[in-house]
Length: 238
Image (cartoon, rainbow, N blue to C red):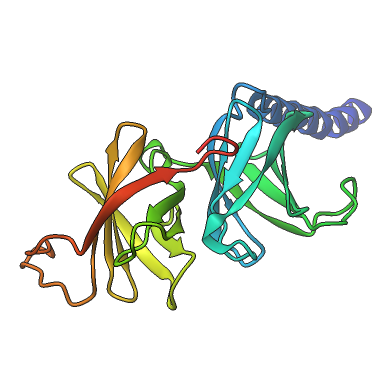
């Protein structure tokens, strides 16, 4: 009886461990990405735990709104592929981001610097998740006309799911965004207010300069300082 008890005591933990291992394997397998399920918008974190977003296009292209690099609010462009159930994004600046299913039912991000061995340790590790549908319909990179310009000058705007906005001109170049009456509004730190309203394949852009009088709801009480047409970017096809 003592031997039987010892054998059972030894086998039960093994069975539990085996069962847990199988559950983890099933969980990871269920989260494995394919060419179809990877398409859409993902929210990642960089080495400073700051969120940004990447749009994965069906044509194999990718564009991010990460705005700390040399291209600033113009973001990063690149391509993507699926390797062993993981989403691999290679940017033209040499960086690689990999969205990896985890055993706890979530996704992680592994970032590899330019020149880093792709089969070695990641340069940085962060968080990854699908961007909410409400935010995904707006996040990305836009080109809009510059207020008070002759109409030939434009700049880039990066709209992030954190509701932070960045632009490629001015200092400071940060702001916050929200949706009002189906239009994207951006209040910039330097006082400018931009409004982007979907129109056909682009956006009608209205801008109010700093010091514009507002009513008690924050609505401008005068006509826009400038108006124009903007566009939202996809790699290779704005």
